Length: 220
Image (cartoon, rainbow, N blue to C red; front, side, top):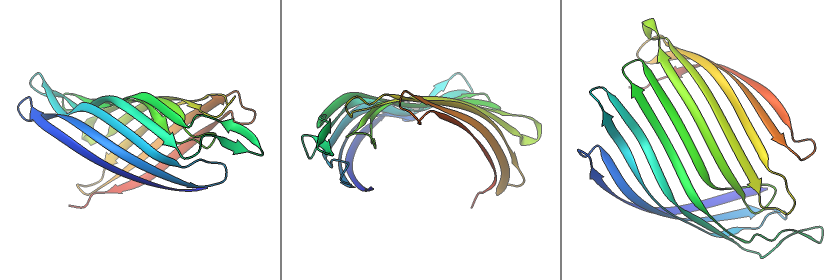
């Protein structure tokens, strides 16, 4: 069904480490209106996190750029039970879990950079009120001669829907790609990715390839 999500948040930060980094606290409130007989509305989503963001110099030319935040999220749903065909399929109307989110980029000199993403939080689910989620992703870029950029990536995601007797879902994959600038305002790129989804639920296990070729334009 259709969903309309409204989120309000406030964030307070303070600079430190030569003013290139900031520590912060953020509170957010979400309301999730789900236009479906098979979903309960999320009428009170509260999250409080604290973290650090910005750039941390490492040596003369290297730097660690990104953010790391820790906190807690709580979700209260409109109804005590999710009922389908007269059967209670989800009685998890109040969910809470710790939050971990990180996105860090390490620049190893002028040619090589690496990205690491880690997420643990609650996410929307079509099989229950919510689902627990763990996600990890890795990307590496290397610039060859003439500014040709090669890319490698991998990711892993695990989700557990809150609906009763619903199995977890595992997704993972990897990819390679290349990007080449034609000018200061345009480059061409191509990516190939392989993905896999595993679950004990019948008919949901599958794998797929994606191939993308395109042009990026940079407006100055």
